[in-house]
Amino acid sequence: MTVPNESNDQVPSRNRTRFPGISSRAYEHPADRSALVALRKLSGFDTVFKALSGLLPERSLRLLFLSDSVRVSEQQFPHLNTMLRDACYILDLEKVPPMYVNQDPQPNAMCIGLDEPIIVVTTGLVELLDEEEMRAVVGHEVGHALSGHAVYRTILLFLTNLALRVAWIPLGNMAVMAIVTALREWFRKSELSADRAGLLVGQDLQASMRGLMKLAGGNHLHEMNVDEFLKQAEEYESGGDLRDSVLKILNVLPRSHPFTTVRAAELKKWAGSRDHQRIMDGHYPRREDDKDTSVYESFKESANHYADHVKSSKDPLMGLINDIAAGAGDIGGKLRDKFTGSGSGSERS
Image (cartoon, rainbow, N blue to C red; front, side, top):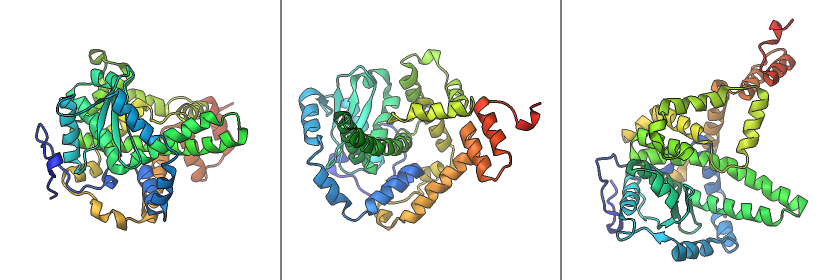
């Protein structure tokens, strides 16, 4: 077992399972994991990003938060400081990242930075969540730090700003936005990974669910119900016809996060999985083995995940893809029915 150093020697405020030496691969979504494994294996990857760091506003961001936000410590927001140290202790992250509270009524949190990650939470989030809900959020951000997501989040922020600056250059803007779109798709999956990390830290599924509901509906828990909230996710996935499937894709493209109901449904599903139970039982990948991880196996696992998702999805578009892959006949009729939301073509007069 890894012994925590003197800068991170505080045990959790209640008895929680700790995961010594845990690799972020243990909780990463398959699509997130395959991308990260591939990036980490690229020769010269670190050198490229260190060179790129000179172009990124990381130093400016650090100075901005230092000068215009409140740094969490034993003297400032001590309850958040305790949560942060607890999260790092549970996930065995040796160096506790700096954490800042920023005045902003919009509930939000992020983990950014190239050389060293920093965590920022807004006052809107701190005021919205109770202690256990906030603990899951802090664990979520520490999960980002352990996975190395902060590097790519910083690049995404930089490229998004760059796209705005070169919007007047048609081809230049298209090239940058193509990269931004791909990064956003990856980052949405990384958010699902970090939600899992938040659950491993808080070890309270109901608190995680409540936090996500509050992000969607505000501080009105007495007016909300977890089961009904999860039904919304099921209705969102399965409802409508092919036109709705296309609209879902268009709606999610500009977002860096998945929709809140989808996050809740994904987390609940993972919480009940064998993978989660094995982690809680102490059977999980170790950081010391990360260097031996196979890119091929990671991509294969990601591909299998998407294949299973297509097969089990109730979304009309995924159903059509599954029919095509299975070699179903009358694809034209099925396409027509998916677009119109009608029954099978054989039922038509």
